[in-house]
Length: 204
Image 1: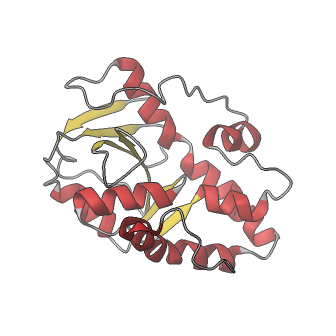
Image 2: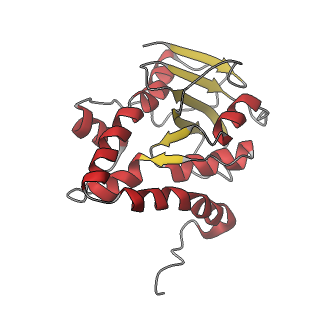
Image 3: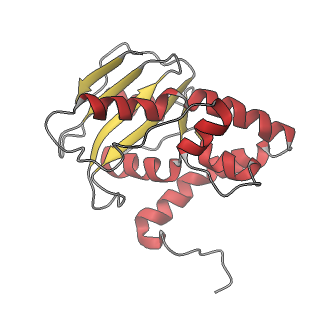
């Protein structure tokens, strides 16, 4: 596994093919309050690119071009948060999107465990460490442990997508999943507009 660290943006010429695994690291779970510190990406080839962003320095044209490229599917786990964070801080909409958490909830209805480590263990037989999950991503220098953690969050998303997509087809729920992925842009708009905790579709 190779991890390439970049500061401020992806370098020119990085090609992820027709799909890229994406994750973000922030200072908290509120996109409106907590700044975006790191974006990690992988082509599913066992290698990762980690982009470290400084506070307020979000002029990252190569990242923005990638996120808005209609010919490149962006694979996330819990895309709702990452897409909201990217839109709020980078000012662009990620599309098209495949969310492994949504897919898991649609086909792994026999369990309530839909975390990234749960999927990794069941679908791929890989035990993922989450020791660096609660750490300060805003420092000037990322530790080797932080880099390895960031990379691990994207290295296996392509394989998870493939496994989940097979199950979606088997259960005749791929169209439903696709509709959910397309609706994410509106769910994110609601989140950023203040309706993150309210289900506007509920009876009450």
